[in-house]
Structure formats: C-alpha cells, structure tokens
Length: 277
Image (cartoon, rainbow, N blue to C red):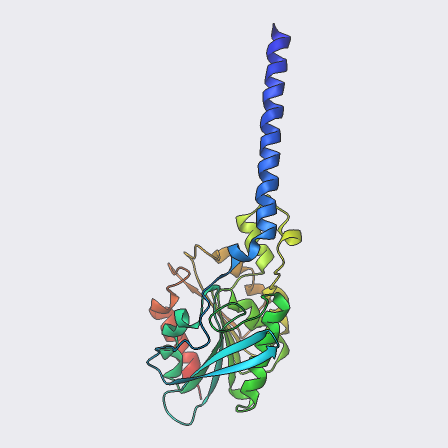
C-alpha cells in the first residue's frame, strides 16, 4: 500500500512539473516574440495631424530612408535669442504630445527644447530597433549642431530615453547630460521583473546606460525617486559609482516614476542647473 501511495505522489509531482515547464516555455516564447508590445506603447499619428501645443513650435521631418521618417518638434525658448537647446528623449509611451507638459519648465530658462519621436511613435516611422534609436539620436544632434555650438547643447533623457541620451552624450560633446528615472541597462531592468528567465538572451534591447556613463565627459545629473514602481530606485542607484566626482545623483524621497517634476527638490535643482550662465 505504501508503495502505491508513493507511486501516485511521484506521478502527481511529475505531472505538475510538466505543466510548470510547459507554462514556463509558453511565457518565455511570448516574451521573446512579443517583447516590443511589452516594452513599448506607442501611439502613431497621421502625417497631417496638427499639434495643439500652446508653446510656439515647429515641426521638422527628416527622411531616414525610403520607408522611414524622423519627426521632430522644436519648442521655442522663452526669450530671444535662445541660450541653447535641450535635446529631449522621452519614455516608452504614446508620443511627443504626452511629454510636452514638461517643456515649459525647460524653455523658461531660455532654451529651445527639441523632442523626437521614435519609430512607430507619433509621426515617426520605420522599424524600431536599438541601432535605429541611436541613429535617430545622432540625426537630432547633427541638426542641432547646424544652429548651436556644442557648449550650448544639453542632452536630457527620461525613463526609456535615458539610455539613448547617455549613448548620445558618450559620443558627442555637450554641455550637460540630465537623466530622469534612468535604468542600469534594459537587461538589468527586465531581470528584476523576470528573474527566472535568461533575459540577456531573450531581450533584443540592451540600452546599457552603465556602459555609456563612464564615457561621458560632460557633467551628469541624475534624478530618481525612492518610490519608483517602474524602474526601481535600486536599479538606478547602481549607476552612482560610475559618475565622476563632480556629477550629481539626486534622490527624491517619495518620488515615483511620473511625478518627480512635482517635487520642489527636483524643481529647484533643475532651475539651478538651467539658470547657470
């Protein structure tokens, strides 16, 4: 009788183990083949869509190839002439319209703010790949250099855009790099959410901020909240040892992923940076 119960228990364990393995594989395949749907949430816009921004602005479209278009919105500075330009790389949601509310806090100090949309976001088209993200960033910088000296160019990244901003600042001269809610790398971030999967072999996007930061010669300022539920504070904190002596890692106590601009600590620090002559 005891042997019978042991055999039944073994069969049950084997059956559940098989179910768990199958489930693990199904979820793994879904992550691998549909990762773009998990990582990015773009909202495309028609080419003739008219933005209703209250800040003066103009659009620039740069054909990348026969099937791809880079859409840029250039927000005018408060006052003329502009002191410089901020190249702004936004997060993984929607399009430029979603992030335009952040612009007045930057333009009030006399800077133009140029935002791009990534492929599939807003009016930008083309295939979304990591190399393409970097190339669009390079195109934005080249355009900025036709009007501004490198000492007047600031690079700003928010959330997903921090990896792209860090890449650009590591390869192009600029006045300052500002990162809001950055990640150590996309693989490190996904490992936090998927600890049982080999994400380094599954996720196509590396965006290794940790590799780029040590190569940035310009001053760096990082803002991150302790209550960030999207990119954990602990993930961003790993970047601090990579900063230069004069760089800043500003911890916003109680700040979450989308509200740092509401905290006086960030407002004052950002004003201090942008008000410098």
